[in-house]
Length: 157
Image 1 (cartoon, one colour):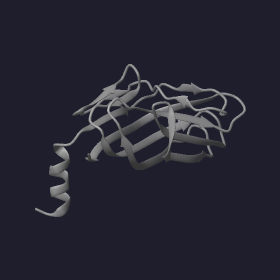
Image 2 (tube, rainbow, N blue to C red):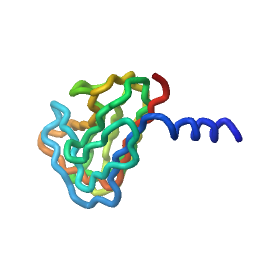
Image 3 (spheres, rainbow, N blue to C red):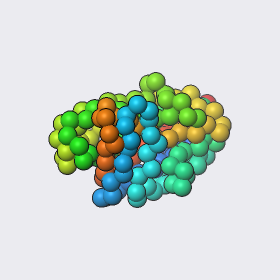
Image 4 (cartoon, helix red, strand yellow):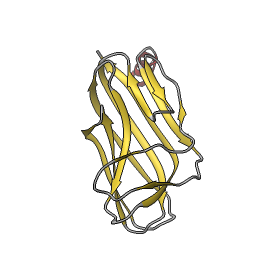
């Protein structure tokens, strides 16, 4: 067994959660970009969870076991507006996590762009994670989140 296999086997027993979107074609509107808006994409699905709660109704993940978690998120989306700078961040209990943030310029409307964010978070029992976005456009912008995945794995207590 190599190191990667040992890590993968060890992770199976740890707290984890996943939410994803697969093949969505429904656009959502995000208002002007001065504040972050919680993302509630169509087709959101709760994936595999252990010692965490993924809530599709609330578009969030609730921590059950405290510890340090690795947080990974990927998004494939397209906008209805050209030349928009888009910020996406993970929020913990309504506060932006400073190390779980990404920025992407969507140069062409209707074209699918991919973005990724990754980092670590020291989380407590009852902490709530959600995804929020904002943009630099003066009016609302439609976004179609075609494919997305956010997953967390507890790596230490």
